Image (cartoon, rainbow, N blue to C red; front, side, top):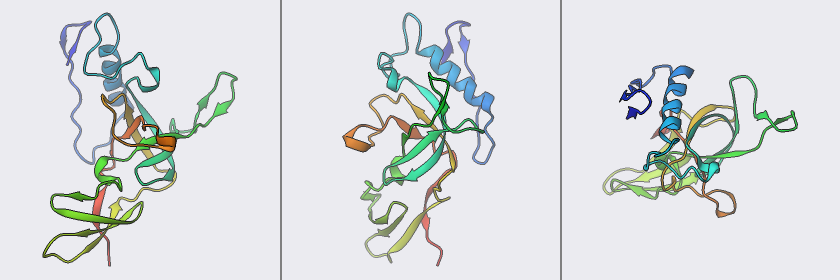
Length: 184
């Protein structure tokens, strides 16, 4: 990526698993996405910004409900839920955030392993010649957990929400959630 205003490469900070991510790092990335998506010749790989509902951006959210393929969330600034609306009152609209693809219940098989879902966070994994394994998401999703999400993904993320509408936001899975064998 090149910063067109300064004509030099933009260095995006490298983050290792377990490292804390500072707000300035997120802001740095967000500023460059926004800069690439504005001006006379916006980057062509980014979403169509004429549709402001899916303009590229990052968001910080709190989980309110856990569904099979998405999370029902509210905006979160680290102190307050929601945002100040045009009337000056705080509003907290529900925002759907897609779970990472491999953490959705639509994934019926992967790498010759088939899955049967008991609920939104538990499944049984089966492979030929192997014992079945009950798996859960670790760390588990929980109400009031904080997540970071992105929107503006070209061609969407494939998640379908309420009334068959596409889910615009995608959980970045900063907490590195994954399916793991349930403790016995």
